[in-house]
Length: 120
Image (cartoon, rainbow, N blue to C red):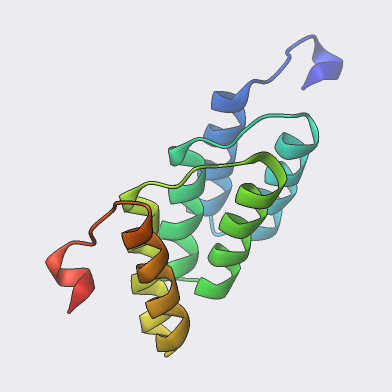
């Protein structure tokens, strides 16, 4: 992109990532995510929820959690309730109940309360 005189911003990266994920090209989305982080951009809620929604529905949900953890560790991404709900649901779907409980406890510590369908 930059070679064509078009400097991407966080919104550009988020749209590209969402497009790759919609096309089930998670590897390309992850490559774009890594490039975004390396250029100093902080992911938006849309960036992270795109990964959560896609990987918790068709990919391994643990990969979505790895992306969330990476964003939090490398650039201080602050989560929101939607990201926590996707994470909890995805971990429950693959039988990682202990990790789902840990994520729920983290969300409660940060003042978020998962919705009733997630908490069931």
